[in-house]
Image 1 (cartoon, helix red, strand yellow):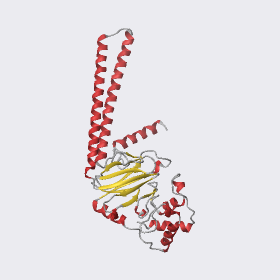
Image 2 (cartoon, helix red, strand yellow; image 1 turned 120 degrees about the vertical axis):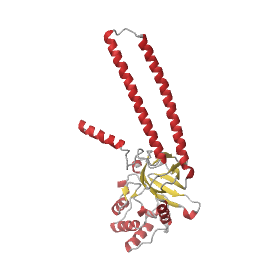
Image 3 (cartoon, helix red, strand yellow; image 1 turned 180 degrees about the vertical axis):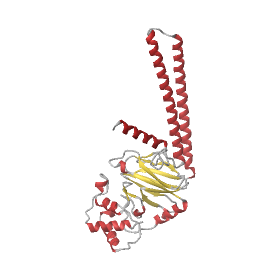
Length: 339
C-alpha cells in the first residue's frame, strides 16, 4: 500500500469511527440502554487514556530536552533543585495514577449496576442455545401451546426488556449484538442471563464472539425489534403449523422431505417431521437468512445450500444429500412456501 493510499484509508477509518459507525454492527452505534451505557464507558475510557498519554509524552519530551541541553554544558553536574522537582512530579504522577484507577473501577462498577437494573421489568424470556454453528431460539411461556421454537432470528418487542437465557449444546459460544448489549458466553452445563432492550424498531446484527470451531465466523444472528402489535402478530403466525402445499411441485417436495434424510434432523410443525438436531423449518421462508446468516434467503441460495452445504459451510453438520434436479427443485419449492 502506498503512503497516499494509507493516508486515505486512515482518513476513511477515522471518519467512520467519529461518525459513530451508524448502521453497522458496532458497539459505537448504540440502539439500547445497555449498549448506550457501554458506549459512554468506551468513549470516556478512550478520551481519558488519550489525555493521559499526551500528558505523559509531553513530560517525557520535556525532560529529555532539558537533559540533552544540560549535557551539552556539563554532563556531570547535578542540580539538586531539579532532582527534587522531578521526584515531586513522579510522586504526583503515581498518586494521580492511583486515583484514576480507583475512579475507573468505580465507574465500571456503577455501569454494571445500571446494566443489571435493565432486566428487572423483562416482559419476555427467550432460551438461546448455541450449536455448531447456529442459534436455537425458544420463547418460553407458562402455557405449553404458546411455546415457540425458531432459529437464528430473534424477534423482540421494541422498547421492552427481554431476558435471554444463554446455554450451549456443545462448546463455548459467545452471544454479542453490539448495538444492543455487550457480549456474554454460552457455556456447556451453565445458564447465563442477559437482558436486551431495543429503543426503537430495527434489525440489529449479532455474531458469535468466541472461537467455536471452523465456521465460527459464519454464526451470525439477527435481532428484529418490532412495535408490540407487529411482534404479537408475528408470534401468533409463528405458532401456527406449516401451510399445506398449494401445488403439485410443493406436494412432491414435502413427500421427498418426509421420506428422505431431512426428516432425521429437522422439525416442521403439522407434519411427521419432529427432529430437533437441526433448525426448526416450520416457517423457514419467513427468515431473512439461511445457514445462520451465511446466505440471504432466496430460492437460488436455498437450492445451493441444500445441494452442497459443505461447499458453503465446510464442517457443518448438514450432510450432502443425493438428490436429482427434480427432487431438489421440489424441496426448494416446498420450503419456500413455509412462511
